[in-house]
Length: 212
Image (tube, rainbow, N blue to C red; front, side, top):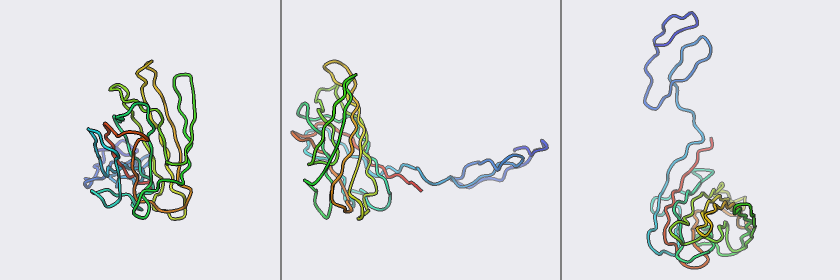
């Protein structure tokens, strides 16, 4: 039951599954309408590492992974990431034409440690997180965005945001990074790995974002 502009009761028709009750404007009773599209996050795949492993890979068509033109933007959420080796660099490589590209990248990154800031660059990886600690209380949390990977007219690119905790002085660190491969191509996957040693622990969830 709702009320019209004169204050008289008005019955609202029953909606269908998935519809939401929406305002029809001043003086009109609300109505059930389809939920608006766009902006929805769809979970595609979650993977976990709990013992020493060299890489974690997400490749389209492998183990139910979707990473193609289905979405214009993909986001991978990383939780509880720790390396086997202390103070190492997390890297990302793109999967193009059936193999991972190992060179031809350009990346710019920065980190903020308390009141201190720093920066670093690289040419052998697409995204970076420097000085990952391996202590139990130094886990890394963050996200990496991959933009329109199916495009053959643009250079493969991504950007990331991470938070870490330094166990030495208990100061949180913020890391940001943007990078890509300098040759235009579609890419159908990516992988995480450290510049030295294996991944000790990681849970990563890949999402596709509907933008229209």
